[in-house]
Image (cartoon, rainbow, N blue to C red; front, side, top):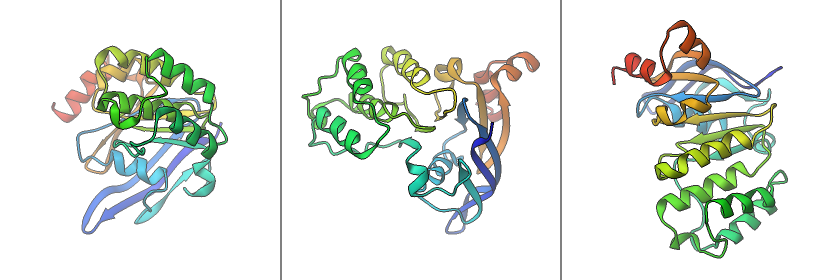
Length: 232
């Protein structure tokens, strides 16, 4: 099975500061991958490059064999680390907007998740708490039948009681040919759903491994290994 995401000597600089340094990486289909690293390590930069929001300084990044652009956006569902939705809109209007904009969006899936989290479609986004707004954004992203989900801190702003449901939503809303990349600092919270991990620091890949290999060969949890590697 071909990789859904590939990086080949991928470099990104902002002025004189390198955010990514010659990254080589391959993410296979049907995997949930944790993109893990300290603040400023390059996680968000990599995700933005994959989504086509910024362009490489050198090297290349490919989504399903293509450079990020109009065609790849049809198969990539992206959750940024900041809210980007119009807060004057109601939740129901946002559901309709996503349905009009994305052919792979499922209104039924979105409405079911809203109901399960007790979020009223009639509420305006600006009337909701920060955590509930982030839940709405995640629901919209996960209601697409995409091939690649790029989630930048998907549970950072939600209460612990909702995290299990949100993680269940993530793992139950992608098919065997799709992959999910989750960037987060809440490693212990997401470890149970991960298939693979990528450790990144100062723009360089420090480690790539399956979670099973870490547990079997190192006899450690992902969280423990992360703390060891990054001296947390």
